[in-house]
Length: 431
Ligand code: PMP
Image (cartoon, rainbow, N blue to C red):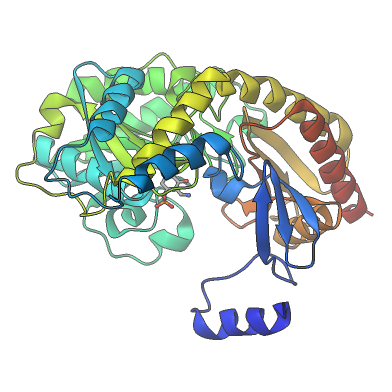
């Protein structure tokens, strides 16, 4: 196959902002387990998982079997106006697993659409279009989801269906937990900041605060311990809803728990899920307390939301996650990677931080003066990782981080192999 010709056609036919990784873009043609193989026959260990969507890796027999069984029925699409046994079963399991009392579920096609739905529900329930989000958060690419994305590249675009306030508490290079400040003092300062922000918004009361328990796109930045606990009474006093965006942090990625929010002693009012649940098939949705979900009237879901193939794949994926206790695997191998990488690369001049939780990890790079963001270095290391046989992503406000999010089915041998390959790519770039 002529990759050059194909890459040229790709560049010509898609807009310039549909950028690709790598100087010589990857053209994968086969996936198996946690390995992707390209057209030239080169194989790579996947530490990217399509931004953590492929939580079980590729070519998973249980998913294929579930999908084949559905295909044999001849029904690929089923209107939300009809009842489906599997759709009901999946909703029941998610409501139960969410930890939200008296929970009901609405499915969407993508995570962004699910974020929009959660915001829409919260603003309807609270009869206010004023919402809060954390700085540097990322919530998706639809109009509403983009509006609460605290990344400066989006905020600059200005258009928003909501009045949005951005609170401290997310990634904070100079004052956050990664800057080595005392967690308790930082949490107190953030809580005070939130109270002031809410005070400032009382003319138009605040509907909800949306958070990622670990900010994924910002470069695997976990919320400080105790942060959501400190926010909770402030929110409750005003009746403000807490939305946990678990599109990246769900399904055990953060290690030890199914949801990222469970690392804190709070339960959200709404939970947004997506990505990994479908084992590669597109599915997202919202779990919310019944009274909040009922704020909306009339059928307002996409025609292809909760379709039979993604639902069949999702049930098989959830079975796999639970049967193999993948949250525990993510916790164990996440610690191995975090500790191992810190040991191997913390002493280099280009590394500012190695952080994350479970298998949602990042390496942050600095520029030559240690004060600027090391965006070019991150790209160089990403290329180096590829040369060493490992695919990784880019993240961070200035794309100055390497994002590491292997499938949750990662084995210990693969974790060690990936760690050595990544560490040696960092050390090569440090020369
Ligand atoms: N929320 C978070 C936290 C995400 O990381 C993403 C995607 N990166 C989304 C929402 C949007 O999900 P999707 O790409 O499926 O629309």
